[in-house]
Image (cartoon, rainbow over all chains, first blue to last red):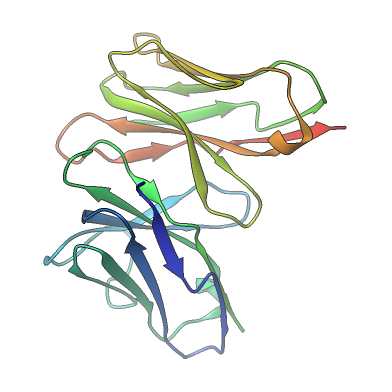
Length: 116
Length: 113
């Protein structure tokens, strides 16, 4: 149980385009979803936290107009990287937390974004 | 401010060795501590979660201990195998309203056949 999927697993795009990454909780209702990014050989950096039906809360230094997060249902959250640039190339990981096990998060497999 | 440190940053051992990975944190007010495994270019696999009231958790060849008062956790891997090669991440869930996960930088483990 407690499976989180991400799509796509990898994406290559041209500079200036927008990319959408989906995160789904497959067998539980995710009241809260988290988006992380990870640079090579570094640990995870929390970008934002979103509760279903509410606006996301962004961490300091994360541009909310660049990284658009939507959490419209209890099983789906999306991260859209708008006008992507090479410096946005990274590994993006989503995580979900349900209503019952509020002190545990379940992680997706990640999405590798490469912006040319 | 909670800070999580993992030592060593990298470790290379021959197959069959027992090994210990260390994680320390600065604020003992935590809900739980979790150990994850990450393979290159992949997502996270949760290995063990220790609640703040617990001292240790075991799963197969893995044993994680928690000493909250001293701000330390260890992950013990018995009889290491080449398939154990990965990066091991320690994360602490802070007490308080936000309950954020605070991450260490990880220990990169290579088990050589």
